[in-house]
Length: 229
Image (cartoon, helix red, strand yellow):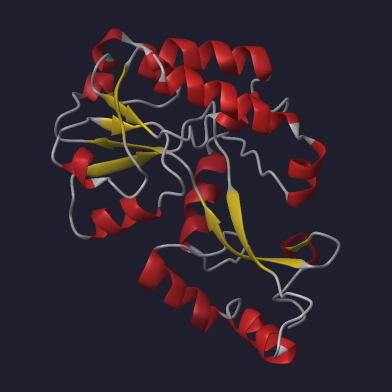
């Protein structure tokens, strides 16, 4: 598929192919949050208004990557999580966005990839999905073929199919996810709109993860801070 599958989509020494993207963000209930308090950054959630009204995840999704040198760095990220944990009133999973819709929590900081929020928005739920300008990131989901696959050629065809326009449309219709790198991508439109506003996205690759093993230990520290406060 020349021209469709490009070099930046291939990672892991040619063994991993990007299939769809995720946009972690901070969904909030737009009915219950006054306009003067609508968040634009992660640091906005340290304001007094948000104390006791925020949910986070028990696995600090998104927050751990703030420790990357390309974003805030270890010390600044840990200091933020320590302050932020005092604002949190509950821990929920990324697929429990209904609890933000009902107003049990006014926001989730951060979600996993935005997909559940986009799905609820399509159902007219009162949610906004903010990509924080101080913590904008794009995550990727990959397909790999095991060396002992019984039908590797069929697997290659299926993987290639998932990057066609038809399959990408199906991915959005079924899972509200697609690969932002394609011009017709729904997520790509969101990314390009924010980039025009000056937002810079951090895109961790498989190589970056392999070269930054300390992030896992930092994640463990953050989990302890958030869950044992």
